[in-house]
Length: 261
Image 1: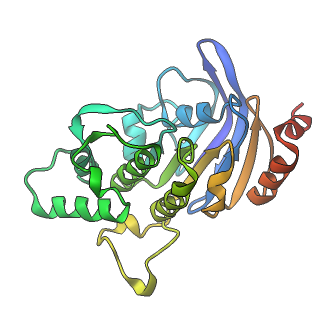
Image 2: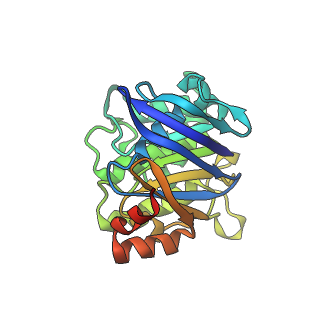
């Protein structure tokens, strides 16, 4: 679903990523670990196409299509979605209106009763209903803000999801709830007995994801198929994410420096 080939990325003339290559197959969830400042967020921002992240070499492919140099809105329409580490507060637009626009393929919906109902059902499912009438991310706690981001992603209905440190700023009590919401987004915890909490297919599909994490805490609440460790803009190693996390917890990221030449 997502393939990154020999990616080199510069910020203000300084190279941050030095030939990153990884591949997330359709329906798999991969985790990217690494210390702060190692280039993890840069990888996600460059893959999504944000300005200021200059790709000087290599390619980003989504479902076999080269998206390296297409605009960010076209990447979103192609099925790539992102949740930020620190989501911005947007004044003047209510959360429910943005979610409705996402569910309506980017168009402003009319006075459609069924659309309003679908937004409310989705918000209920993601534990976001209390702040539908608030301005986007305004006055929300860390955990509420992250759940709101996930709700927006689910409304957007991407095929490939990029999650930037979802546990950042979330207290321990809310990480479990956040993990459940992420699993819901990725289609990894279907309702028992075939019960559907939302009739649209967006909540049924098993999505691909690349999740970056510094602490690794979020991996205790969701299943990941493969893991990587990034150090100073290089992939130091890859393998079973639980084993990688165990090594990091025991020895620290300094042990991974031995694998970077």
